[in-house]
Amino acid sequence: MKTKVALITGGYTGEAEVSFKSSAFVYSQIDKEKYDVYTINLGLDSWFYTDEQGVKYEIDRQDFSLNLNEKINFDVAFIIIHGTPGEDGRLQGYFDMIGLPYTTCSALTSALTMNKGYTKAIIQDIPNLNVAQSVLLFEEHRPAAADLVKEKLALPLFVKPNAGGSSIGMSKVKTWEELPEALNNAYDAENTGKQVLVEEFVTGREFSQGIYRNAKGELQVLPATEVKTTREFFDFEAKYTPGLTEEITPADLTAAQKDLADQLIQEIYIRLNCKGMVRVDFFIENNTDKFFFIEINTVPGQTAQSFIPQQVRASGRKESDFYGELIEAALLGK
Image 1 (cartoon, rainbow, N blue to C red):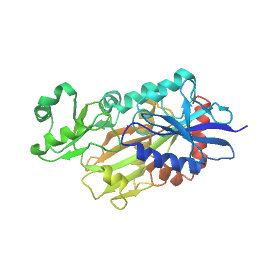
Image 2: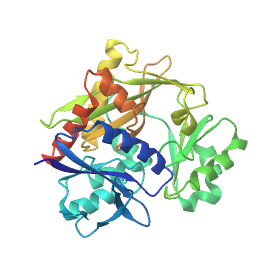
Image 3: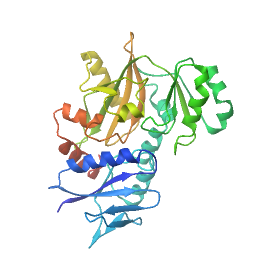
Image 4: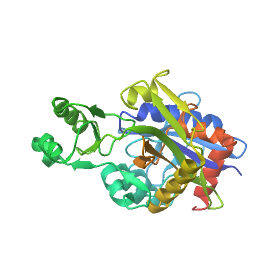
């Protein structure tokens, strides 16, 4: 009997459109000889499955089952929701309570890593890993936010929602006059918790690198991707507009840089108690070769052009085998 997989997409934020594209690619790659895959759309108003005729069927939230001609109980949830509720621990906590295995990090790790400021506090003492100087602002700080930033940080700056994704609400600030608007954009980004992280800019090369645990429980580090963009930084437009960014996979790193990157990525994964696939973004600072942590993404994009699929192919793997490994690892509790 085939394993029944709930491929979960959508979500409650502007990142839903990206989730739809990611889940469509994952669906196209999963081995249908081994897995029965049902794409489940989670929206604020409804959780549902749509059949080939376009008929919608509601999910029974008591046990996350689906009633078609018969009741379908899923064996595993493959979560491809960027943002809430699939990346911030809410959905993971629900699945924990009903006993359904899933392919992502735990509820605690997902909630922690959605908060960029809290994540930095956990990993900042890893040897040879650096974090940029930063200020974490809450809603109560908003009236005096600009003054608090000026007291502690130097230009240029990155301003971003502390719990957002896809670079939504993110700005690069080069003058103090630009700071108030950038803070407002970050504070007002949809469903990001009214918290803002402001960081000093690091001048260097930008990289993104995936890692996952296979069904044997072994950590597998994927080749890094270097990101070169014509934009001021790797913002939403740079991520999703063809031609604005050059992505080089595998990245052109020296043997020493590659070894250190692999080591640091593994230590970050372990320190944050990650599961499934995650992606870590980092800088290598110009002139010093120091590694600076940017952020971790526990539900990274999965379109054909996304970093993780690029890195899977560069490692000599097939996406179908890779997604199968994630499913089997989740079923085994790895």
